[in-house]
Length: 345
Ligand code: FES
Ligand SMILES: [Fe+2]
Image (cartoon, rainbow, N blue to C red; front, side, top):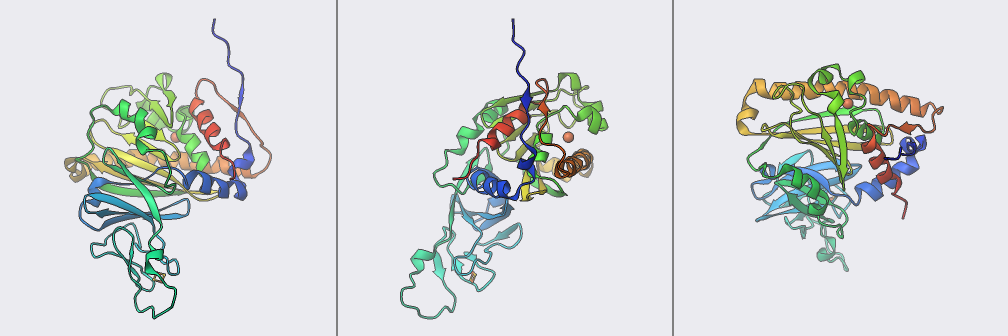
């Protein structure tokens, strides 16, 4: 006889509105996790660079010889940016946008432009702050923790699920961003359950079989199984997963995938960054691309609406905690256990 599980409580409301907690999460989660940055096709030529700010950390990756180097996008002089914007080619080296200090692609200070003589100034002590960079299935990730465990360990469950699928031929087809007035964890938790689909997403509900919707957890990965009502009709007919701490991996059958970063901007503001990687033929097919883009735009608008309502209600101060559905909210419970295990060090 199986035992009925005990009722599970949610995390407390303070977790979603307290600036002190937010500062701890920023440092202890985003300062120590593998963070997705780019597909290898975006870093093909020497000096190709991609930059992103994640939870306030300005990060950059750059092609250097056969490999990838990664740094904080912060100059050692007076903290100017090396790469301004999302991407650049820095074949001649990384040059600061402020006073023009120049660094080699492996981060050494090559020229402190017109600095003047100062005894005790050793350029070797002013290299860029390094990040760890690793590639998983053509996707480039960075980690500010130089002692971090290998990326492959965290991605192993997803790796097994993907089997022989090959993403090497994809190209970056589109980026869409959405700003949402809620704590990043409210959006992540919403992403981690299908319980709300019949109420919040009528179009999606018509495509997926809500009764067979399943969420399961394996290590650092949460999987969604959302069988389509009709084979080949739903764009969600692929592998649909979430990797801690903030990456949605949304693959569309054979048509490529969308990497969805749920980026904390402030305690109650989140930016969704959707990067679409598609086969070149699909990227060039305006209708096929539009079908993929418009489906996620509709679903995102619906999620934005509900997540902003939830944040406002949490901020109202009448709700302290709730309860989790044992049937539908295992992914939410898993994520809450993860962030509640983080403490200040
Ligand atoms: S801040 Fe980079 S050169 Fe001055
Ligand atoms: Fe949703």
